[in-house]
Image (cartoon, rainbow, N blue to C red):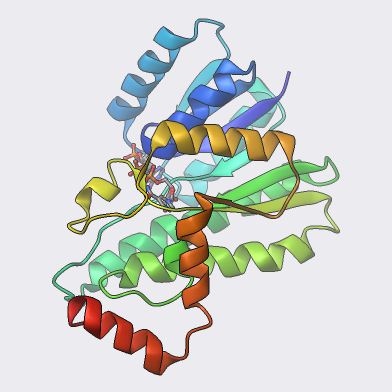
Length: 252
Ligand SMILES: NC(=O)c1ccc[n+]([C@@H]2O[C@H](COP(=O)([O-])OP(=O)(O)OC[C@H]3O[C@@H](n4cnc5c(N)ncnc54)[C@H](OP(=O)(O)O)[C@@H]3O)[C@@H](O)[C@H]2O)c1
């Protein structure tokens, strides 16, 4: 039986992906930092799937010790992790464009350091097993977007890290993959005050992630294509044009 560990499995994309893996006979471990929220997610997942392959472990990924203990526990007591889906993330849009250092610190701690802590312990267990670490980044990491400073730098860091580790972890026989979804309707994006084009459900995202992680081996997983390619296209725009467009759209 194969095992997947999903960080941030208590809501949104992580929850929907856990449901897909469970439905397809995988052993699933979900973790997140809020014990009550995690327990409620576990109960809902069990209700839909009674095959007893679900575990939940409270784990705040911004704590190195917590992450270390969680991975050790899974590997020694539940099963060897075939896929680690590093999905957990903090998100806080900044529509007033106020520079708030505590928000930057939070997102650096959770999204950047948290991802690094997971990888640091996973690499010791997963080496030479041809297993997969998949990091969920975002198209908001492709460029600097107005109002997305803290989130944007954390997602850009995850993208850059994924590309580097894709090369470096070949030696360890660990597959690194990166996932960049377009707009998905979740607790996080409900905080946005703008209309999100091509908004898709978390169930849609869960299915895409399950299918592509288990049936393909490509480095990059993106969906839906149209909006993510649009984000990608902005990467090649010279600053003059990029800034002009934002000024026209929103007087930024
Ligand atoms: N939704 C989108 O449109 C979209 C687009 C592109 C990329 N993404 C990426 O997709 C991933 C999931 O996002 P989502 O929209 O599904 O967000 P979400 O519904 O807010 O879920 C975030 C998950 O992360 C957990 N989490 C937050 N802080 C944590 C911490 N310190 N330690 C452990 N877990 C923590 C949350 O649970 P607790 O509160 O219990 O900790 C929750 O389970 C993120 O990496 C996000 O950047 C989302």
